[in-house]
Length: 140
Image (cartoon, rainbow, N blue to C red):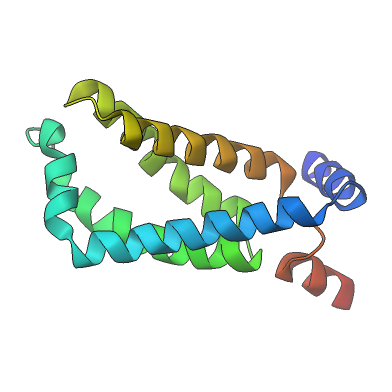
């Protein structure tokens, strides 16, 4: 708990609007991808085709879209950002691995790698000063 408090203090002392805008854009992008997976579920089924024989492919389909929707909203507003990102990490690691196990798509690999790196950054950085977490902490 002390490590998280020290990371929060450092992040609040070194917060910048471009980083908050980057967090907001990340949340909006994940929310958009969640909607995209719901409306085009055959794309998601096609993406996990290399994992078809592994157990849990149906669970994967029912985990990815809701995790992106709720995680995107939470990251967008800066509420429980680290928890939302922890829920995104298995999906993003899987998105990077699917490009190596299946057909290599450089665009998808680049996008998923960038989003994974941003999530890892915000996992350590936190939600920043311009977020619901910071507002709620200051109200208490």
